[in-house]
Amino acid sequence: SSPVFHGRGIFNYQFGMLPHRRPLTVVVGAPISVTRNTNPTREEVQEVHAQYTEALKQLYENHKSECFPNRTEDLRIVL
Image 1 (tube, rainbow, N blue to C red):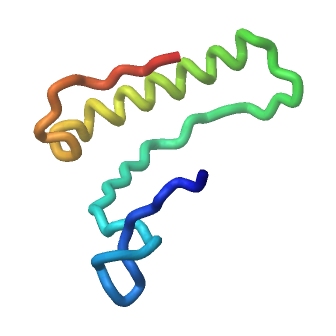
Image 2 (image 1 turned 120 degrees about the horizontal axis):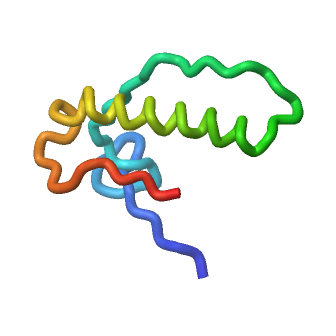
């Protein structure tokens, strides 16, 4: 069976298929320097992944108080 969608309409806000309007906060960090390699080793991939994960953690630490003022838990990255 098809799922039932509930949202807002174009001209009405009671019923429709469009998503409800909600605030969206976007935070962009510094770029990660990666050298192009068409055949990377597993260690090289893990190294870049570690850089990305660390940059993501730092981004969270820098903006957690303004983006998540009522948080009950801190960031948890599951691999």
